[in-house]
Length: 355
Image (cartoon, rainbow, N blue to C red; front, side, top):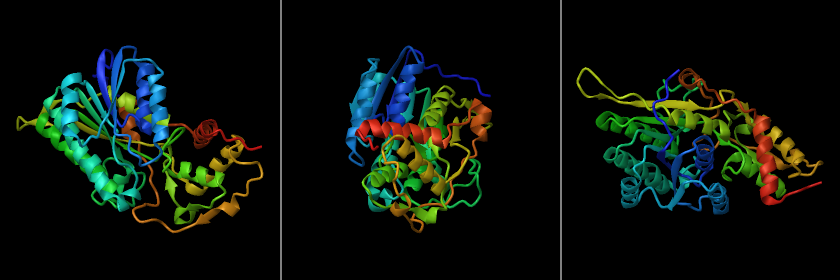
């Protein structure tokens, strides 16, 4: 077990992507756990998905009445980033802002270059020129590409991305490593595995399935239902992030007198792959329980088994042993518990009740 070496008490923390799914939940958790903390949230609030959900998340944070500042800006705007760092003197930076989605990267590659590469470069430069105790940033399980060995370990080679999204996330890890080596910036990358939960991203499968089933449309289940994913509940992801924020990799010099990069990467996943068909079955059951769908809903008539999509991989599955060894933590929320929370939120948010 590592020892915490970064206190969040009395500190100012930057969370980019603060209107996003993970970012907004992280901000709320920080305010819940830390009595004296200032959080600055940054988000460009793109219309990649329904902005109303993003505004709802921000409203929940505002309602807490804590030391909170929100800045609407694009990570690619270097002048804004530099001014914000100079003004706020961040102790910890959590970079969760990114253009997400594998399939969207095929049709809109420019968005990924701007946000995930140029934006992250601006964050790294700002950390270089300001005294930041710890940079934590989101990577992705997609960096494992078409690796055949499962579970995926952070010791595995990740040189064969199968989407531009994955390539940008691997690039983030390489850029962070270089800046850690050159400028002694403690950085930790987090490879998230298929995050889900209430108020999540509407482009994610479980959310999209729910919308289509409610509208009486047919859902497509890729790879004929033979996909396996390490579905990880958002609260479990946030728990891991909060713990990791409080331990920065140690600064030390090597035999050459230069810094040994204070750099780490962790998987955060459920360590338990679920078959997509089983996932959809539980989702359907919980949607009926929450009265989003009627009791007699004919699920079989609304599903279509289709081939794998370009850029997708059949199995993603996290080896979380490093997270367990260093932080004594392993995500554990069951799929049914997590999908029940999502279904109940969906029913409330959209005002859907079927008898």
